[in-house]
Image 1 (spheres, rainbow, N blue to C red):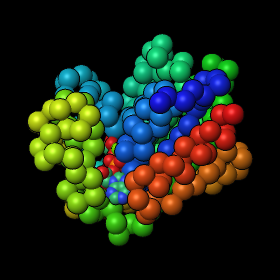
Image 2 (image 1 turned 90 degrees about the vertical axis):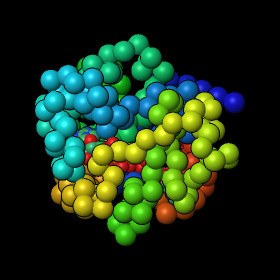
Image 3 (image 1 turned 180 degrees about the vertical axis):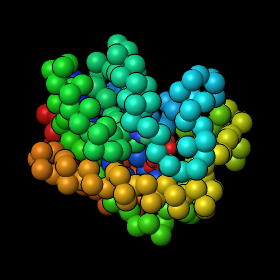
Image 4 (image 1 turned 120 degrees about the vertical axis):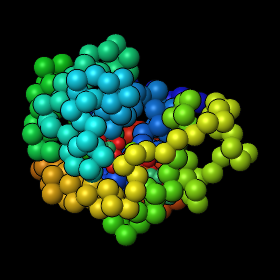
Length: 226
Ligand code: AP5
Ligand code: MG
């Protein structure tokens, strides 16, 4: 059953590569009727479509580095302007730099919105390579799976849509994950203190089982949007 939040919620999921941001954002989307906005997914779509932004982002993403704030903000603002976001949003993988966090504050204040919670999914770096290198997604609906941690109920068939084709990301290899973790610690981890200072920081143990984390996140969302 979909629960509804009482107003246009703005939630941020913070965490390193493989923390479970995408997995949990999709579960929250389903449970609360919110819209998942993943800048990684938006950038991968731009790369696949061959847009100017996609052409500029491709090599940067494959190297595990951060795409420029300018490109990411343009893509995010376009997506935030679409009407479905009025239901409330879960930002997955954004903001990722202090400049992006400040730009988000400005964008939300223009729209009379505010951040309800920035939730840090806390995980050990050592778990990340295994999480990311075992990941694959349904080519049709994007549902995420893992070779060891989350397999479809029937091998080779997506639980959500029945699709039978799956894909793996170009940046999901041990070398690139190292660069992505370095970028996370250098540019994104400082946002934890940024949101703590604004009184909106929450955290969950990201080393728990997927369903346990989902319950803990749902409790936070219910509380901050009540
Ligand atoms: P992005 O797509 O955001 O990738 P990421 O941050 O590296 O995060 P991931 O998507 O790898 O991990 P996730 O936390 O979503 O984990 P998932 O739920 O899939 O960004 C990619 C690139 O785009 C960046 O490197 C950068 O170049 C660019 N980019 C994107 N946004 C940007 C921005 N704002 N600014 C600049 N550049 C930007 O889970 C991983 C796996 O683990 C899955 O297989 C899942 O089934 C499994 N799993 C999940 N939870 C658990 C659990 N609790 N236990 C066991 N397994 C689990
Ligand atoms: Mg993701």
